[in-house]
Image 1 (cartoon, rainbow, N blue to C red):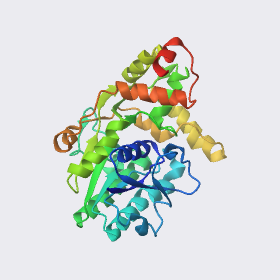
Image 2 (cartoon, rainbow, N blue to C red):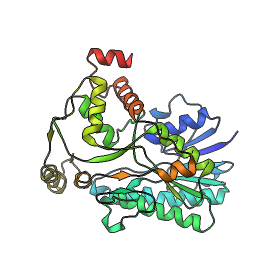
Image 3 (cartoon, one colour):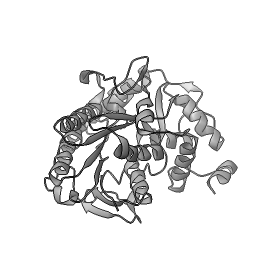
Image 4 (cartoon, helix red, strand yellow):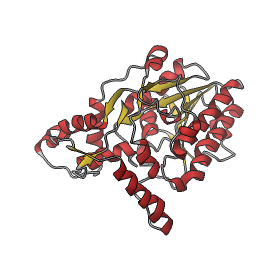
Length: 338
C-alpha cells in the first residue's frame, strides 16, 4: 500500500484529493495546523499530523512516504496579508521540499496555480507562457510564482518534483468558500443583481484531484501541467448554474470603475482606519480581464481528460445547499438535491 503525505487536506482541492487517494488504496497522512477547521476531513480513515508548513521538524512525518502532495497555500487578496502569504506559500514550500528531500521521498507533486503563470492579454495561455513577475497582480499571485521557482530549483538540483497548475475548480468541499464559490453562493442566494464581465477557465475539482494522481504516475520532473477545463465568461457560467435551479443570470453589468472605486475606499481608506474591508483592490483588478488557459499539455502527457463542468456545477450546488450556504426553496431544488 502506497503512503501519501498530504498538505492542504482541510482545504477545497486537498479534501477532494484526500478522498481520491483513499479510494485508490493509498494510506494518507494529512498535515493540519493545530486549531484549524478540520471538518473537510472528518470521518476519513487517515492519519492527521499536527503541524505547520514552516515547521522545521516535518521530516519525521514524511519518512516512508511514497509521495508528497503539497497542496496547501495561504489564499488571500488583502494587501495586509503580504508577509503571511510569502511566509506560508514561499517559505512553506521551500520547507516542505527540503523535508521531503531529507526524508528520501521519491516524488513530490507541488500544487501551484495558473495564478503563477499570469494572464496572456487577449489570448489563451499555456505552460510555455509566463507573465513577468512585476505584472502579476497582488501578492498571492507573486507568492505562487516564487513558490514555483522553489519547486523548479529543487528539480534542477536533482529532486523529483512535478508541478500542477489548477485553473478555477468547482465542486464540493469548498468550505471557506473560494472567491468563485462565494460568487456561486451569492448568486444562489439571490444577492447578485449585476456582475463584472470577466472570464475564467473552470474545471471539475474531481478532475483536478485526478490530475494530481496522473502527475504522480506520468509527470516529468521539473515540468508544470495546467489542470483546466472550459474557458467561459462568468455570465455564461452563471447561466448554466441558473439553469439547474431555475434562476436567471444577472442582466446588468457593473462598469469596471465602480468596484475598483469601492475597493480603494474600502481597503485603501477604511481598512487603514481599523474597519474590516470586504472588497480587495487586487481581486477587482484581476477581474477586469479574462483569464483563459489551455490544458493540452496535461491531456497529451498525463492523459488528463477533464469532463464537462455540468456535474461539477450540480455537485457544488448540492454541497452548498446541504451545508446551509444559501436558502433552499423551490420545486426544482427538491428534484435536484433529494
